[in-house]
Amino acid sequence: MSNTHSPDADNLMAELTAIRQSIDNIDAAVVHMLAERFKFTQQVGRLKAAAGMPPSDPERERVQIGRLRDIAEESRLDPEFAEKFLNFLVAEVIHHHEQIASTGSIEAQG
Image (cartoon, rainbow, N blue to C red):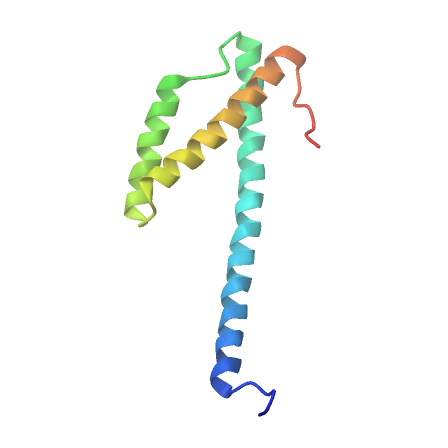
């Protein structure tokens, strides 16, 4: 019995590797986009702190959840997942806004 792969197995592995590279590229893009997003939300936090506004804006959050659920449906992504993801982001943003309001900056996380 030979230890060589069949051409079908080689093709499968090549396709799997290519797909995984695409996933890795998307993951990198998502991280870069999140970093950019947080730069802007921190600017919002500084503006809110300077104006004495609360860290949370429940009405804005409600509107954003509805908007992203609609986008998720249009994109064939589970709207429940999109909502959970946004809720996770919003919780982190509020935490940042609270830090900015109390200390003037975001503490580095280890």
